[in-house]
Image (cartoon, rainbow, N blue to C red; front, side, top):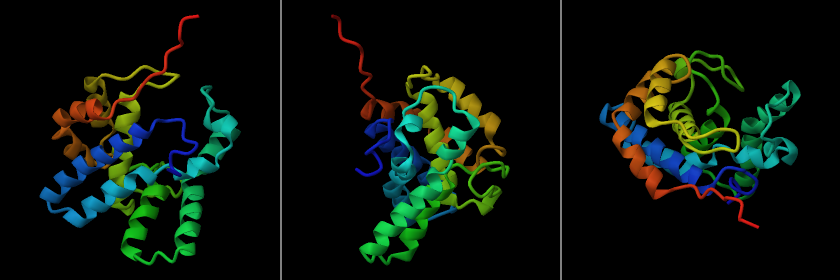
Length: 204
């Protein structure tokens, strides 16, 4: 609920990101890159990735214009703001499952890192980026491309596939790209299960 409180994207965006993350995780588990408990944790915590947006000023958060350099710098603070917010909450309630806490905070802090080290906030590169964050990065981008936004129309699945392939090894972890490419047939099913409702202007 807190993640969605001020986020202009829909609640079903968070559900789809969770489902795409699980698709990737399940494939990686078959490849023995992680285990089932890890996949479950990523699935349950992926929807917290943008919780820091609740602390971004509304005039920036809701803007459909291209950001200025200053606005982009403020928006790019949301991963660290999210970590601070959630750490304070969990410390207050004495949440002490350190393994799960690490996964949650890694997802929030590092889901905008790039595999080539040109992302933010820490410019981590390759496998220095926690696996949970590499998974959610791919899932989040897929849903952003496939979804309607005020400033763009949805991409076709073919265009998304080409973008993922072209970004493998630079934007994205190649293992995560392989994983989602093996599950493309399930993406349409997830979209139909959790559709966005586009509000249209009613006739006068």
